[in-house]
Image (cartoon, rainbow, N blue to C red; front, side, top):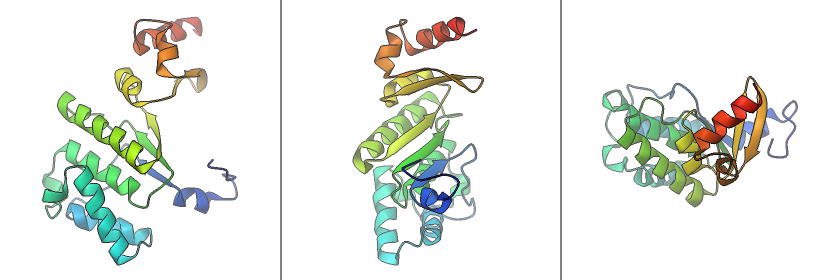
Length: 180
């Protein structure tokens, strides 16, 4: 991964990756700014660099004006955005996002997808997205892999997979039937 051996270079891999897992892992009693400051300290970011990066990410995600609010009162979508900011705080090369829009209403999910797309482009980071939302994968991903029961059934640009059906969902179902 990233040119490192996962058995011997785990620390180097962790330094170059970020993640948003099923549970956002935020400290609910802290403000957004304090959450990111804490994680910035974990990553050993200097004070000035940490503050600048926090402002940059929160501004980019439209959370800057609410940075001093305690996270417990935030919507799930806002917490997801903050967790994504946390995953990008140390400028990783690769970010893993597990179902980042799960549980969000359609408007919040679309806004988060737009933010992810902009961040991926502006940060130059590779995003590894796990999702069951095929329309989301089609909109966000340059390359899609279809996995069933631990087997990679297909991989390619969404357009190529769509050519097998009317949508990525149709292509997915066709692949499932072929490999059933």
